[in-house]
Image (cartoon, rainbow, N blue to C red; front, side, top):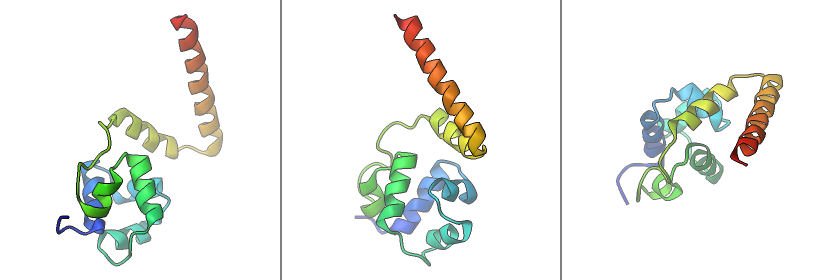
Length: 114
């Protein structure tokens, strides 16, 4: 176990991903103020926050909780992170349209693979 707190490790993840606090916390459904207090250790990190960070940013949960192991579970595909960040900036109607287009591309790919 290292000497860093879980709060410090979360900040380290955010900085590694080169994301501003506002974008990072929006993706894990926290307010800017709540997240800022979390990073400086004024708020405790609960299991929900750990799970969201691990899922959304592909972070190793053991690393977050104890500092042991590698920071990320898998090689990060930065294109996916960029897509997620961009997707979150759209209104629900545009999000639905984007998802429809992705489904169409998936069908087209299947046809060309046959």
